[in-house]
Length: 628
View 1 (cartoon, rainbow, N blue to C red):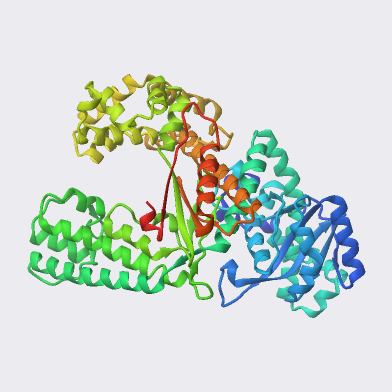
View 2 (view 1 turned 30 degrees about the horizontal axis):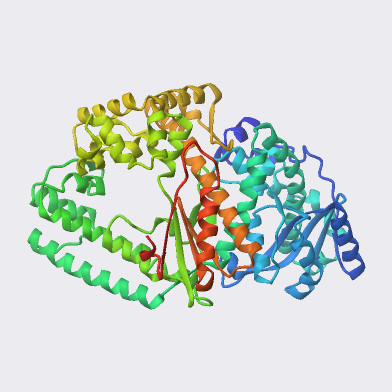
């Protein structure tokens, strides 16, 4: 059982019923649940919290409209761990009662808030008029820092891993039933509700235990400062962004969708004309027959079910037949319509016509913030029609969008970390870095660099950051593998500081088992010791890229905290509404816009002191499309 748990062999644990055989109470659980029934009890608890200067808690909530959307939920009870007891305060949807007792506690920055998924709790509290602050320890975020490549950080998973307690098994066995007699609330509840209440109480018990263990682990791995100064403060920023949301012009989105449908109809007719017959373009089988049997195009890949017609195959066939260009455009438009028109519509909140995307800080291995439901970081920008979708995202009346984008932050970090003299000098002199690289790699004067040579140098520049291979570069630039290898070799010959960094970081990662960002964010790389060559290559690329991309993510989080705190301290109406990799978008009041520009530029450019300057490029517009 112990080894299966370590190796995450959960299927075997279920198959052999090992949970039933395990002693789930290795950690002796010893707590009472006390229901708060009168004002004196709650006043005494509040006094204890103020005296301790901390609150260890867990909220119970219910969702409206069968939704999992945190903006469509409300608080029903709070479970608090205090003086080795667990107190349950159920306010049965009476938010005024909760506010009366707890508003001061949650708005007091000096009282440390210790819980799980505190960004959600920030939003729950904002909905009832409580501006919570002082979030001190979130066990989910702490566990993520300790192992950023895990797929799950549930309380159940963490309790099983760190305190050897199977919560579900414990709640559903008779061993806890004595708790029922300690709390009159349970007499009104059915068995499922009783179990839920016991589970919530067990959660807050585990939060208290996990808090102490995870804090020690963060200290051991030198990540406590990262956790306290970056990850916990940015939680509040992300909560605010999600709560505020971004306005979408629904009418314009529908019109954009109609344009796409009309264009799809025209393309469909053109594809039928070229192929000489009508067929289902979305059917891989029918499309395969048209391309490879009727039109006799070269076959690059076959699957068990027939010919492959995926994007990679179509890209290789682009020059073979005019139908391919039409098919690629057709697919782009179909995806735009399904994912970004019909896909966005359900997420527009009827109350405020805004989309409230989830911003996650425990998903990516490098520390980057991700977005989902919907993913606003993935709005297409590579082709014009896709980019025009950004026009439907607008500021509210009397507001304007101010956009700031870090200029080449990853290359600037590469020059700083590798200490490459040539690249540092180019950035200090504010030179065109791609032109500079082209001049050195191709051995020609700066003013003789052609547009094509600059593009090739740009591909090598960014490819190096991601550990690109000669094969990958050859595909990207449509050149021979030999030519691509020559470009990479010439680049590394000229920029030997970068070459040394790439070699050294992989060796260091093999030795340590992990790589770190400048702020000590870790990523463990067991792939480097794999027997599989492809897996080892992935590990090598991750070793080179993580310190760069991870540090860029850390810097962006610091910038977000700086800007958010400044806007808040000045009591401004302007708000951060989006973060997209190296870009920040602010919905700024017209009267505040000049002040906001200064705050944004300063907050981003002073986030860290590097050997090269950090530059944030600013723009303003009346929609997201025009802000770039």
